[in-house]
Length: 157
Picture 1 (cartoon, rainbow, N blue to C red):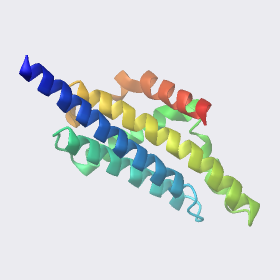
Picture 2 (picture 1 turned 30 degrees about the horizontal axis):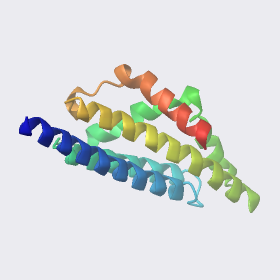
Picture 3 (picture 1 turned 180 degrees about the vertical axis):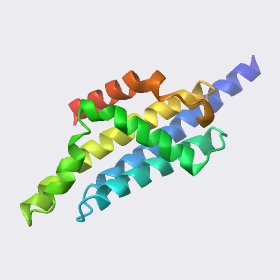
Picture 4 (picture 1 turned 45 degrees about the vertical axis):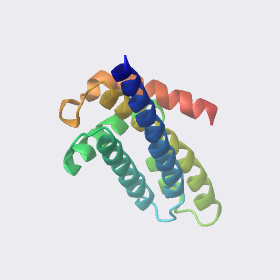
């Protein structure tokens, strides 16, 4: 009985820490949207997401290789393109327009980047909590979950 209570407490603590990691990454993703240099903002967003997955993996006691994380994050973001993440490339390009282009592009990319980061983070937490590792992460199995989480998050924004 005591072991079950400890496992529940450990899981609750892990989920709380996971939420903090995702929240922090969402804030950094939003900030990356305001990088004034087109396409560098997208690189910043990707870097934040890769670091978030590394942090989540470490929290769950999983070892990772940066290349594997980059590949998994890129594949997940690719699944979001039809849902609404195809626009960031265009939004980033809007920053080429002096003045309002930078502001409009920054606001839009910040919101979409934070929502995408949230969706990616949630999918990895669910995978790690289910006992999965990065080596057995299958994008095909979580495509719908990441799309729905992204849609839900952007609908609230």
